[in-house]
Length: 111
Image (cartoon, rainbow, N blue to C red; front, side, top):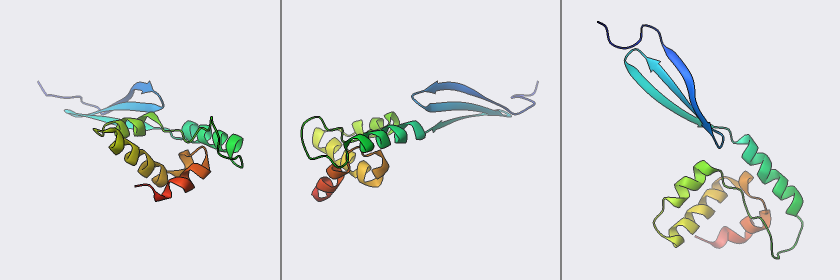
């Protein structure tokens, strides 16, 4: 009896927090593909910027919106200082997720 499928099959297995998991069966090989849609997260950060930019520093500023996929990578660092550095590094690399642009300018001198 031959192993695997006689046809290639793909289907969506799970959708959570914008992350879509697709399973692809090709012969006797299974491939799990994870993708995520950044647009809702970018829209949220854009709304934060529209509401806050131009304001002065003070209490209650929303600095950024970090999508769950990136947050998981940042939280994997062992210590608080390492996570803090990783967060600011990620925000400098992905400035569209910043909700208060003045915070990013202030953080340029940070590690």
